[in-house]
Image (cartoon, rainbow, N blue to C red):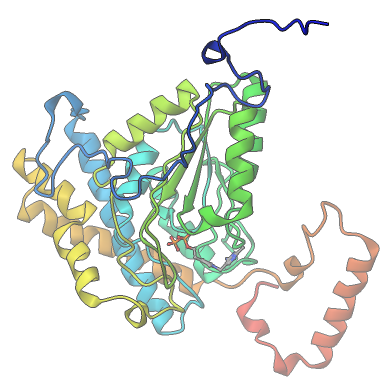
Length: 382
Ligand SMILES: Cc1ncc(C[n+]2csc(CCOP(=O)(O)OP(=O)(O)O)c2C)c(N)n1
């Protein structure tokens, strides 16, 4: 019998696998990542604050640029004072934002106030831009009775329902899939808002980052992932560069707006990782000095403003004085304030207090009454 075979030109054949849309290839070739010449770094102005390509100049009005500068420098002033206050044991912990001020303010300015923010812990500028009061930054760090979080978390774990800034938590990257879920809910609501999710390049190696990126793409969620690649995850250096977009047009508009408005898309973590870290143990002082002195978002924007005659030595001096006074006032007020009522340790574990927690609360009070002299009760609201 003659075997009847269909004749076809195998070169015209297309793969029929449901998992991918691609052509066949007839030679074995591995795909190599291009690490030498990676995704280019977009920039609008150089180190002297000069616009490189006029077509990309967002031409922001003077008031807006001055606001950027004042928010970045106010953040910097707050950082310096709270860092020192931690060194003196007045607060238990702190994380500075040195060198990353531009990423916060630039991206926050490109959002609308009702866009929902998920952060890591080094994005205080986003809250600053949205008008979070200095008093509340301080209240959180001091864990005093004015703290919205009732003094329960470590310093710099800010949150504000009013400003659409989801409360920060310590476990890295957990906010990434949560942000994708929030964006999915936003999409279902047909709400005209997006979600932005910040994380460090170190956090991007967590499993949760993989989950979040994949879900946001497959479920087509209106989310911007904003990775702060500052070169270090504590002592671990990195050579990765990541800025993810899921192709959603709203997000892309927001990303391009955010990046083009950002005075310094490329940056380094200039400060120590946190107050528990001495970064000179793992990187050179020269490197830090370079970024601090030569290529800093604040100095770059200042050059830009100076060239336009919008800012001079006098304005700088007056603003330095005023911003320092405002921070110190909030600082002193926070320091004088009592700590929250000790019972608040037991509330909000569940929405309603279950009986076993009520029993533990009563046991605590019996204990504290018996051993009063061993507890700093005078520092707490009663
Ligand atoms: C799940 C988890 N693992 C480890 C830590 C301890 N930790 C806190 S910050 C940090 C480094 C994060 O680096 P990166 O994401 O690059 O952010 P950066 O501090 O540089 O802004 C680590 C390992 C943590 N908080 N959570």
